[in-house]
Image (cartoon, rainbow, N blue to C red):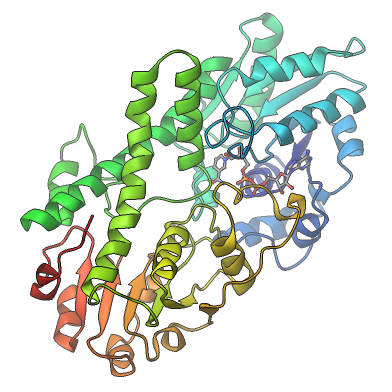
Length: 480
Ligand code: NAI
């Protein structure tokens, strides 16, 4: 029996290991983390992350072959395969600050593995890391290795939050990179054996280490690029009277392009896209490739532009000021079906509106007040540094109230901004919302989910990303 340990019980480590435990009943899987509250939550009925289907999988395996523990040293020492799924945020200070990946957490995990190991181990990079990280990790592990053989594999995770369990059960591909030595190939075979218990062999791709590491950064860059491409078109659609949904449909019908990831929105978010592209940009710069770096940097710049454009549209439509006005924010998570708010566009939109002195009333079905206040008062790039490792709690912002109901949020509001595409926002009673709002009542739909015609009939002034503007908005053009 192969004993598997995963360091890092987060959005990736938790669901990934739960699915491995489900599909490999003869393997023991232990997820360890230095965060006591996180492990306590994994062992309770209130899991630390919201992910459709996750609770069911955890309940089936927990206590049988799936365990969560804070005893990092013991379980690392006893395991054969160690996945490292710790966070790899953007560096906030020092060399490469604001771009390079902060590998502090990874390095301390590697040092711990080196310190406590007494037998040969396969160490798997599950976290997204800069290309060539395995080389550095190898140095840490083999220095003072007491004759132990460590094989490093790169096995980046491609799951998407909100659909993590489905993605893990039925992945497009599993990627495993390893050294091209006999030992490296043997290690690849062992890890392949784990996935092969439920993933068809032709979907398990094996490569060299550097290709696997770079493929993850490249995949995220390509995905984010599609969003920035369609978002850049949305600005042109608004200027010309074209409809971005129609354009995206027509473009996506080309089988060379495909229809997915072509929804215009207020911008992409999540813990990965921005940080991984910044990391890619930094790696390009370090390798003397400024043109390549600038090319990818544009993907982020268009994303920032899109968020600013949205804020400017809100402010300019409302007589060029939102000072003292109540604005309802529906949705704060970076997308539906997750409670994750890391790098959500809602943070920048809310900060932009607060900058013009608006009063915000925020509702998200999965995000609590503490999280929202923390996010809004946090400095850029601090979002992915775990709370328990942060020095102090930021104070709450007075102009922000967080409520637990969309109708409460919109009561007496001048405007509604939809920032997450939760299904329940499509089904709201917009007549009731309109009746309880200040007039003129505005809806700014940052996710293109509302029935525009229906809302206009009710009396709302409606703005949707990349859609033909109604006369009111044309008369008050946004300053981009
Ligand atoms: P997370 O922040 O949710 O979880 C990381 C966990 O590692 C935290 O609970 C933290 O306490 C723990 N940790 C940090 N240092 C530790 C140490 N030395 N020993 C034990 N535990 C330690 O992060 P998340 O979202 O799970 O991401 C992990 C990695 O996976 C990142 O590199 C990310 O880029 C990558 N990734 C994330 C995806 C996502 O959708 N969130 C998707 C694919 C990859």
